Amino acid sequence: MGSLHRDAGACRLPAASFAPFRSLLIRSLDSASLAHTLGGSPPLVDVNEDGTLDWDELEPFLQSTYYDRRPIPASLDTLLLSANIDGWFEVSVDGVMTTATRRIRVPLEALKEAVRRYKERGDSLIYPLGTVIVADHVADDLTIERTVMRKRADGHWDYGVFDSTGSRVPSTTTPPKPLAVPTQCVGCHLGSRLYEPEKSDDVDPR
Image (cartoon, rainbow, N blue to C red):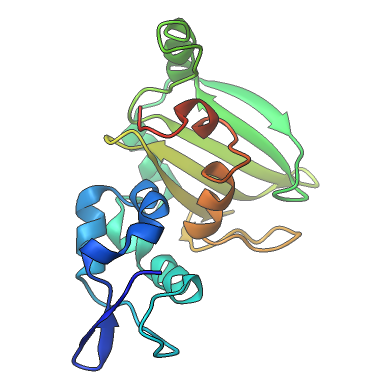
């Protein structure tokens, strides 16, 4: 794990020593946000004072600072208006993430563009920058919450969760367990199982 510098009683992780977490961090935050986060407040804290930053110490820090560092609006309506979406492709899926049915919505024009360029991009479905993907979590015909991904300028994705009123919240609520932004979003989207759209993104940002 990365070694820490102690500063006025708090332990901070210098940028040169967070290599073990770099892949996850750079996909969760763009470079500018990452630099701001590592040098910002609240500081990263070495809770057990063992001189290293462990995942259990990094995870709550990321969860408490992520929305402050990434431009995810507090309102879902604001996010969708800024994306200027004209029509959706929708598909409903069931899976292990939640017991609710997920109604996944992809902007139709973004999907058409990704399909048009599928072959020239090495048989990969690469969505345009700025693409917003929404998943409505539906149970008993009610939308309980919505999870959102927006493609960033560096080719990676921002993540967000919005409750039934469209207000931004820190985690999902549907069973089998709450999933926190961003650490448990990237746990699936950037893990070894790689779901779309990151499956096509592979390692390098597109």
